[in-house]
Amino acid sequence: MSDALTPASKIVILDFGSQYTQVIARRVRECRVYSEILPHTIAAADLRKLGAKGIILSGGPASVYAKGAPKVDKKIFDLGLPVLGICYGMQLIAQNLGGKVERSTHREYGAGTLKAGRLCPLFHKLPAKLEVWNSHGDRITALPGGFTPMGTTENSPHAVIGDPVRHIYGMQFHPEVVHTPRGKEIVANFVHRICGCGSDWTMGSFIQRACADIRAQVREDRVILGLSGGVDSSVAAALLHKAIGDQLTCIFVDNGLIRNGEREAVEKLFAGHFHIKLRVVNASKRFLSKLKGVTDPERKRKIIGNEFIKVFEQAARELKSSVKGAHGYKFLAQGTLYPDVIESVAIGGNPAALIKSHHNVGGLPERMKFQLVEPLRQLFKDEVREVGAELGLPRELVGRQPFPGPGLAVRVLGELTPEKLRIVRDADTIVIEEMKAADWYYKVWQSFAVLLPVRSVGVMGDERTYDFTIALRIVESQDGMTANWVRVPYDLLARISSRIINEVKGVNRIVYDVSSKPPATIEWE
Ligand code: XMP
Image (cartoon, rainbow, N blue to C red):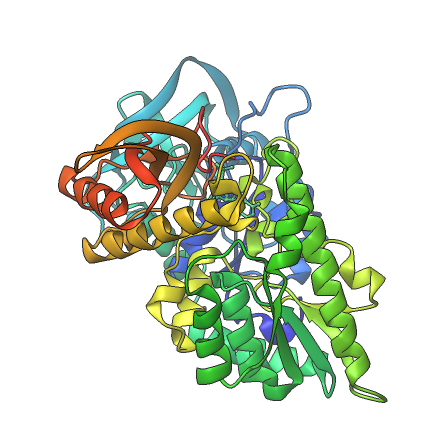
């Protein structure tokens, strides 16, 4: 990362494999302080060079005394930087600085009440009793020199410990999770009051720095971007256009598997409103003929992925050869986000990285000798939405629900036909319209229609029908890795159901999917 993109205040989070490490990073950023996640193996000398104003040690599933438990370079405690250890991070502090950690007779898990120390700067302006969320097995039985207890729970006299001289603090509960309702204020006290960070991580300032950085990287050359109509590539397009104007060309591939009006909306917004150079490739016939007769979900996905790369590559090649001499298309831009670039540790993993956009066109940059521009690689998804809004993208776009790369192909179970695509597309339009009208669309993670490959008997007027079933899927989720079906009002279900049956020819039955993930997945294929 270049210096131009680095704001003045930065907090480094060392990852010990907690499922909440990314949440800590997001909480810090919500305090308008830039944060970066690094592997716990980083050497203190390297950490010093990063110019951070404070360090947070994450939680983790291990016990500090277990064989192979992740360690920290002890010298980080001598850097003179404030340190906050959370759960496992706190036990590491105690272990490394001369305290004693022992296995608890019982695991403390779930909600608890913390009696917060009055003088502890972490609890500045917070009440004396706080609801907190615990999840730990070990406990501290002897404090390191210089440390005093700064908070207690029913089960633990050392729920919070601190050395106010060296500015090193530890807490065994998780301030980052929503079950610790005032946790964000604890994080804010750490980064602002203890580390002295300002509030300079704003999306306005990010846009300025990112534009400067893009211009420095691209100079007079040109950039190609695969625009999908989704949030990430759209925000990347708007940002690049602000930075380099006409040096950017977007390619939109219509694979025939997109929603009603999607292509027109992209053309209207990007070409019409933003005056961004846009090439639309109509490849729907090509995709549909390749998918003819294919019923296996994995094969469908593979065919779509491969075909996309071929079509995109061809369009990119044409663009490349359209400019002769200097200042050609040297760069390929991608909407890569921060969760995709965090170096995850083996004990934890990085769930968000598992959901990859199909527009991260594998292999293409090397094959076509493109250099990559990834202007969003520092951002979390909610920050991308904020940047999009600042750049003037409409709410329908920045608040859009995720849409899978293979599009409606995974929402028509079994073989795809133009007729089935028409049915799922029209049903999808009604679901979106009704969800928005009832003010539910932006509250849920996803809401969509799936066309099942079965027909059932119905009756319409005096006539017997033998038509398809639409399954309605509405889920809430934080990151797509787990999900719950949403208890939307019956009236809303009723409206969606009667509109689809009345307006979409070929459907006579609607069912509501009441399964959660796991064990079900969100999409049906
Ligand atoms: P599942 O069905 O695995 O979906 O529970 C989890 C989330 O990922 C989305 N999804 C995809 N996104 N390309 C994408 O960009 C894909 O191939 C893809 N498949 C699933 C899905 O919509 C849900 O939000």
